[in-house]
Image 1 (cartoon, rainbow, N blue to C red):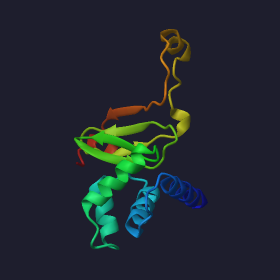
Image 2 (spheres, one colour):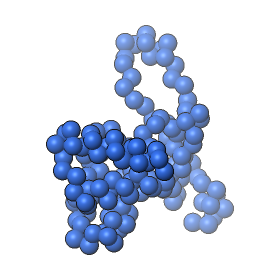
Image 3 (cartoon, helix red, strand yellow):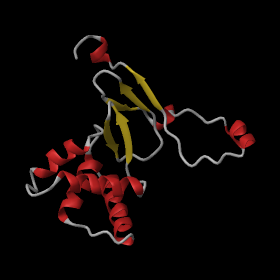
Image 4 (spheres, helix red, strand yellow):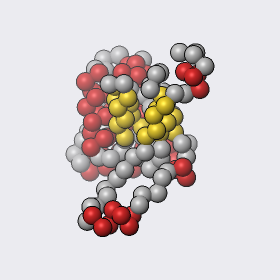
Length: 145
């Protein structure tokens, strides 16, 4: 819980530094994405936050998520034509079910090491990379979905 609070404080400061207002709605959206472990869509975040803020618009959720993505504070993962969001920006692999579109995290230790010597030979500078593994989750393999 302490780490989530530290992340919240850090992100709030970055937003302030960039000139963004910290409205109660924006704070609720930020708390919702930071507390989620399920890689929610904007619509799912909207449903959760709208219970507390009935006047909230889906556009506000999208705008806030776009700002957070541009600041590098959330990852956007497109699966099945829909964007899902992950506040865990530490490099880690994702397992993505192609049938039900569930996204699961693997621990950072499972991250594949880049072939740095080959990349260096090209003169290419890596800024970031992600590992997404597509397949079928156990429930979809069993025909549960």
